[in-house]
Image (cartoon, rainbow, N blue to C red; front, side, top):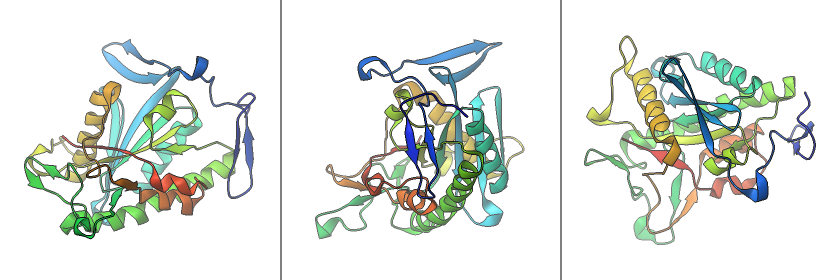
Length: 263
């Protein structure tokens, strides 16, 4: 597969891809997001590449749910994590950009004051009810998300090596505009009566559907509404899964800010 000139990626397993994923914008300016309309179907695009939005609702083997959103008229979901991975692999193989969300905390604050240890993040609430990352369900899915994200990333890494397909993760939406990366990792917090049921789907699949819809609707002006407190630095814990899988070899990825959205 020829990606052109000027791009190089070396993975921890030793293979190298050269070329550019796409043309870098003039003078570092961001490429404007385009939309295509066909029979009232709207697909988000970055330059000439389709954006596919996924969300994975973390849980036990029996309570996993996921959703894939291309546009309001073309989407699907399920409860089998391997089928989710197969869809992501196929989208990356066909040169789409993937935005993969996790319905669990993917970052925690790096605190400097002991009084702030285990304190909820700014925005860790839904409909006025506190949903801290460090207590109850938040603490459980934080750890569960590490193992399950590693399972996904390991499978993607193996696929990348076998078929020589670059998979370049990022937490920064701007990297998609620059076309240097094709896998955006983000967080969703879906809780309480804000959940929108999806006919015929499990509640976990419905959560993932709702998160994808939020991401899609807000994409043009996508801002996090869950952050650290008082400008504390990020400890982006899901970066550990990216490092362990080999999809990234940059330790600084665990310091990067990431997108976290809620209703």
